[in-house]
Length: 303
Image 1 (cartoon, helix red, strand yellow):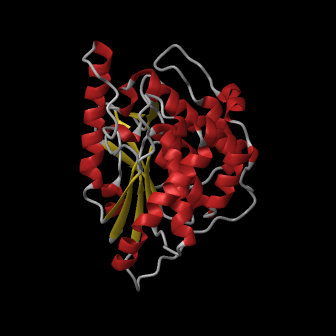
Image 2 (cartoon, rainbow, N blue to C red):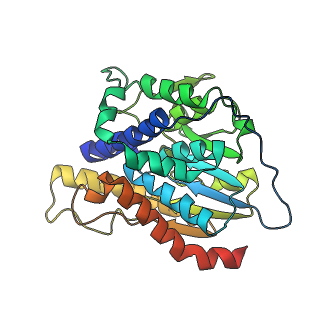
Image 3 (tube, rainbow, N blue to C red):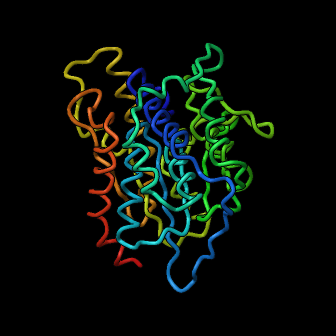
């Protein structure tokens, strides 16, 4: 079931994640003149794929995951991302410097990003054109074939309900399609397809990482704590609707993550309906680091 249909709470979490990442691109930027080359992948060890899942602003914990892997010397040979995972994974694959993203997000206020949002009343609340322009202006016309880490970005074809892989062509277009949450962002029309959020069809893109050639897949499941805390004490129309949708999201993400060799499930919620940590980038990064460090022994045994 679409991540996008979780009501006002998830709507705001998605906006928050896009705001943070947009600020990163706007304030840091990537030097367009720098040549970007493909990474030659070693074949003397198992190839490692990182599957970064959807999950709104809580997906900023992906930064902490990548940071912890870097610090531990765990190589990442392939990246697959859905929604917020596509945005963070795609930008990281350009220059392989997660500290750049972290410093940018901690140095600017997310409220300033409100001016970046284009509101539209047709086909979705937000056109997303300003976000797309910011990404385009900062990274330039980056072809996915030339990323430093081979990357697959997942979107969903609304005509078929099936996942669509982007692993070549313009990076900006791919990210824009993958973050197109229905009822929040307008879908993207591309080669006759109507594309929306990758989390609708593949919230934890383990299969995409396998399809790239990964021998070992490390999956990051942001949706795995939806039922850690019960938010309703008595049945009501809205609470039943939201909890039912959460159940579908949870089970789809859990099923996909189960196919990975290592699953890092990010538990970032508290007992509140809107978790305070979901609005705190520093805490989210720390949460991602903490759960990744706990998984390092298993990862090291596999490689």
